[in-house]
Amino acid sequence: MPWGEFFVLADRDLAVSLNSWHQIAIQVQGEQLRVSVDNNPVFDLQDSFPLLSGSIAFEALDNSQIYVDDVVVESLE
Image: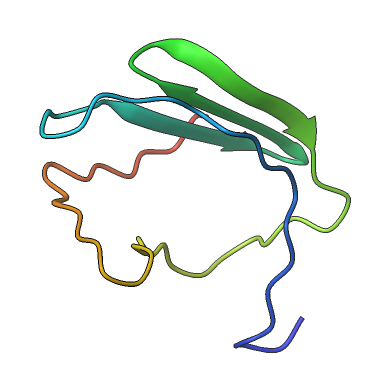
């Protein structure tokens, strides 16, 4: 997939409190992808075409803002 092309693996509405910090964990091992928010599972899915290297990014919707702190990337092996 060339840079700049994106597709949605999964989505869902998630109610979170505003103006407070939340812990987001993303775990990837092979084709398995798990996401949790405040230690509550949100997604557990298979990605048939996983990216084996690259970078991460955070995005906010128009006319909104987010604060990101303490980003840690670790190997699961």
